[in-house]
Every structure is written in C-alpha cells, then in structure tokens.
Length: 386
Image (cartoon, rainbow, N blue to C red; front, side, top):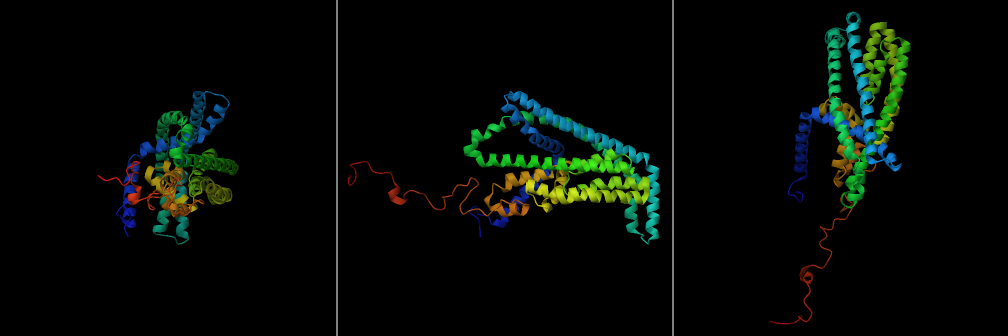
C-alpha cells in the first residue's frame, strides 16, 4: 500500500538508508575536521553549567563566559598532558624492553609447541607479541599523540567560539518557546544526558585508575602511571575499554616478571575493572543516558569506523544526538527508540505530531462545508433577483 506521498514504506526506508549512507560517507571524509569539532562541542556542553550560577550572582556575561572558556581549556590541557606523557613513555618502554620482549616471544613459542600447539594458532599468538610490531605500534601511538596535540590547537579555537555563542542560547526558550519548544526541550535534555554520561565515566575512570596504578606499583610493574592513565582514558570507551586497558600492562608484567606477575595483573584487573567497569558502571551509564548495552557496544565500533579514534570516546554522545534529533521528532519511530533503550518511548497517539497537537486535516475543516461555507450575503439581498 502506498503512502500519501506515493511511496511504499519499503521504498521510503530504502531512500532513507541511502541518504544516511551518503551523509555518513561525507562525515567519514571530513572526519579530520568534524572529530575535533565534535570533541570541542562536548567539552563546552560539559562546562556550560558553570555560567548559570555566576550570572545569578551578578557576574557580567562576558566574565562568566570567560570562566567557561578557561574551564574548557583546563580540561583540554589535562587531557593533552596525560596523552603526551603516556604516549612518549609507552614508546620508550617498548624500546627499552625490546630484548626482553624478543625473549618472551621465543619462550612463548616454545611453550605453545611443548603443549602441541603448532601451525596457524601458534603463529597468530607469537605474531601478536612480535617486538617489531609492538615497536611499530609504540611509534605510531607516539605520532598519533602529537597529531592529537596539534588537533587540540584547533579545538581550543572551536571552544572559544562555541562557548561565546552558547552564552546567548540560554534565552532560546523565552524567544522561540512557542514555535520551537519541542526542539529546544530535546536540545536541553541532550545536553543533560551528555553531561551526566561524562561525569559518571570520569568518576569511575578516576577510581579505577587510582586503584590500578597503586596496585601495579605495589606489584613492581614498570611505569604504573602510564597504565593508570590508560585505564582512565579507556574507561570512556564503552564495554571494550577494559580489554584495551588490560593488554599493555599484562604484556609488560609478562616481560619483567614472567607468568606469575602477568596472572597477578590479569587477576587484579578482573577484580577491579570487571566489577566497576563491566558490572557497576554500565548500569549507571544506562540509567543516565537510557541506552541499551548492546547499542552502546555497537556504537563504539560504528563511530570509530566513521570518524576515527575519537569516535570511540564520542560514540555515546553521537548516538544520543541521532536519537534526539532524528528519531524523537518522528512519532512513528517509537519502537526504534524503545529498542535503543529509551524508557519513555511509546506508540504515538492517533493524529499526534511532534508538538503534541492534533492533526485535523484528515477530519476536514472544522467549520461548515459546501455552499453553506460561502461568504454570507449582504443584508437585504436575500431573495433579490437580477
């Protein structure tokens, strides 16, 4: 059955998917520009609440905006310092322990062969720990860190302009509330969700980083501060961040202390990180942003493919953006919102629109129809003939 526009539902779905592919392809091509831009937008969203209490205390708007910009800069400076330190230190560790890494790979290959593991499986395992590959990874990580550092200078500029413009957006509800009320409400809800998401992740990430760093230091694993920073950063990657933060310190423990130390590190991460990051934190994140765990995981893979490494950190905000401004305005997408984890998703009421007003077009005009709807005759002309 065709829709009023003359297109079947299947055709409309295919056209929507084709348009989405074109848009996402453009985003992928422009990821080098859009990635830092989106990160700057998220940081401005996080720090914008600082402006409200300052203005309430009588501060001039320009001064309150300056405080917001300084707060955004402090966040960026801390992130940049941690990434540069961890990246440079990691590259140095791989170079310093290259002979031990080579010996570990040879011992691992001998151990696998002694258990009868040969062929492709043993080759895959030993290739994973290949020192040359690890050195190449360390070099690329260091280069990526400096590239991110260069991108941060653009982010600094973005943050200034966004914070200055965002200062006047607070009056949008008063100015356009009657005509754009639903859009403004969705934007406000989106900002709150993104802000809470990063607060929850930063809180749990700091707890995990401190515990892991102190425990690795007590166990004698080299560079515990690097692995603590890695644990904090990977905590912003939903679901798989635990694995990304575990592998490097476990490999380093295997190199310097053998299997007993490596097993101790793995056990430590399983107790601390699994309990906090896998069992406890996802529940808080799900309650904060109302996203299903499955969608949270899939969004990491999807957005990393679209905009690169920053997509892993911005996966949840970008997914929320799509749901808030593409799915929520469409009353017929309630089931898609429900699948995404939105507890408020419902079937639309008959004849409802995004603004909650009734659609009376299908019912016809509310006034009289036909000849009776014509303009009334002038007094005294009724029954007059020509």
